[in-house]
Image 1: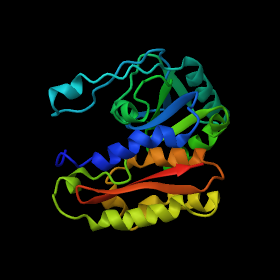
Image 2: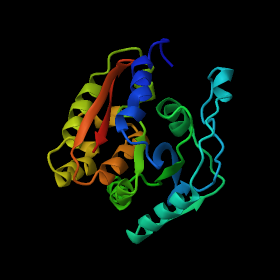
Image 3: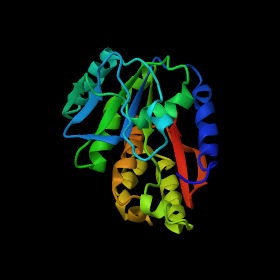
Image 4: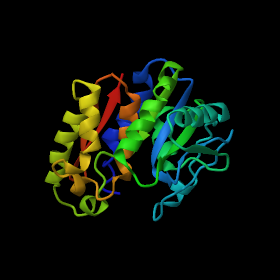
Length: 245
């Protein structure tokens, strides 16, 4: 989608992300903007297959491989942590990795040697619920697990395909940066709960499934202040990424 160099800057950033994290994590939890379930659901297979959940792309994109192992033990831990927080959750041993996992992580950890589990969003897409889920998963960070929200800070496909400049993406990105980088976690959380009232919010996200992975990551960020670590102009839109810790 877009000219050949559209994703060049993002690809370069992703390629150095593993090194920038520092110590290689024991495992990764990827919160996917491409998977919604009635309850939070986590992949629990030892060797998850890939799900090519896109259409209209060149044949080579349907032959991509990323044989990263799963982690049944980590999946069980996630279900337990969410349950202790009063959040219904379950595991799925058959579910594979969708492209929210294998596209970025082919660049982040190209050897596919770090165990990965994928976590769904909860149907209903309630912001407070996803922040709460993130808070429940914060202990994983002290256990050597990396939590990654895989979505997009701007996700309006009609806008991206329009070929024009998208000023609402700038307005929303400015607000989102202020919210994620707020000095204190309670302020950050209150702002993110009300994200739909932000300037340009519904233009940037007609549907919020690509924003909610960031809210889970924010909840898991605890008291760490968020930082903007990447920004670019993609097909007329400002897109950014953030990090905690």
